[in-house]
Length: 259
Length: 350
Image 1 (cartoon, rainbow over the protein chains, first blue to last red):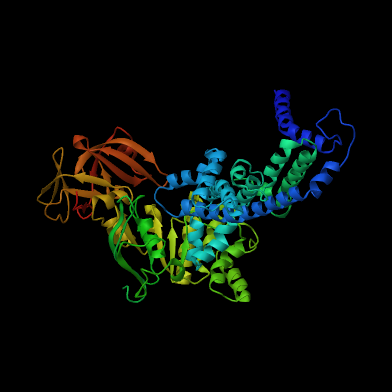
Image 2: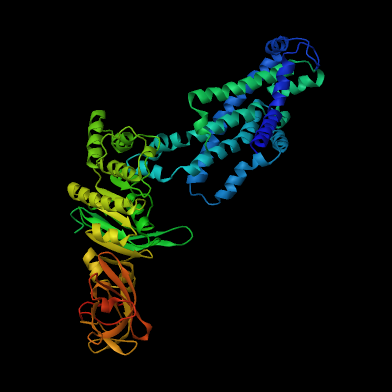
């Protein structure tokens, strides 16, 4: 029984990690095509990726977009979650469903819709539309995680603060925010990853010269299939790991993951 | 009574969305320094009334005054009241000392004074030495004390308690009842206490407002409420009681089965009386007002509670001393029952 349990778990972990391993494998393989067995270990693809102006511009844009998405979607999602959980609004279920719909809807539809909207409004495909698209996709993640912590925190705590002399703003800063912080941080992390990793929405909204990393990688892959993409992926994976570790170190993700 | 500085409610009404009238034109005057209880079953409006005094709910109509000043429109943070919540509502991310200090910080009390006052408040609820614990590391009784210390440390004009002892076990609850009462006496606070536990209200309060369906069913001292309930609801809600329905006759109420209960003064039109089990006396069969059959006898420790069968299948509870004559208290035996004519309370709304 125990052996079967371990075997199943091992298989699941292997299944999840194999793609990562394959990416790493090809990133350090010096051959200019996907080949097996490897002929050695080299960092030439990393060098090519890190010195490519196109890739670096795309990488920079993705980082900035990710950070901006965290700020905007984090604020909007948190505010929406507070309004839904505590605002006493009519039709809260409907509101929640509307806010969460971008998760349910195929992202390609959201991208196409935003593209058409931008065209109809004559806005063109600017970075701002791209940012808006990323925020639309990211808000539901923040909303979900913040709603989850709010469901476990007692509304009487805010009343207790008010009764002790705190104005609504002070009660929020002193009591509500510290208590929902785990949800906000988890949501922000999701928001960053969703934005940094975003492909279908970006596909419709990027313009030449304003490409995000996934789009740049896709475009590169159409003509070349050397290890640069594997190196770019490895850098992305490293970034994600560092981000999670950083939050874990400073704030402690473990504790806050208990939603 | 209220002019000297208590809490006054004038026609306070609250209807929730969906149309339930939680509180219906409640008027009452709580004197300064009084221990005042709002008592009633769940849904009677007692908590909503308390929350309106605290400022967490706004009344649709009516005025609330404290020491004569109209506070109806004031937000909770400007009312200077202390509130003890049902589940304590301690800030989980703060230590005991920080919880207690919160209200003082909000009032911009200097740091050094805060430390001293927190220490003093924690000493008052006998929690010295736990300053640095988190609420989750405390027992229910200790959390209760922290909540109390946090509420009184700011010297509130009124202390509001929403079923503060509801989550404690019976022994602890009793101990806290004594402590709360002592604290009330020591601080001379006006205290508004919400409970559904009639025993708790009777033991602790100076006065009680029994509420039902958003209205005050009866307002009075514990003795008045217990001894002279004015309605079937109050008689039934407060303590064990017998309610006997009959037809008015000269000198009493004619009961089904052909006997008459003496009633000292029966207002015209009243067809029911309330009688406490401890007012029923047992005598030898044939020696009382009417004969009854002992159906069940429960030993309560300090006394016995008998379930008696009166003529026409009417049941009657009687509380008798534990050393009462076994010939009269053994199930199956026959006994005469009696009470003084002044004991039954006429119930007008029956």
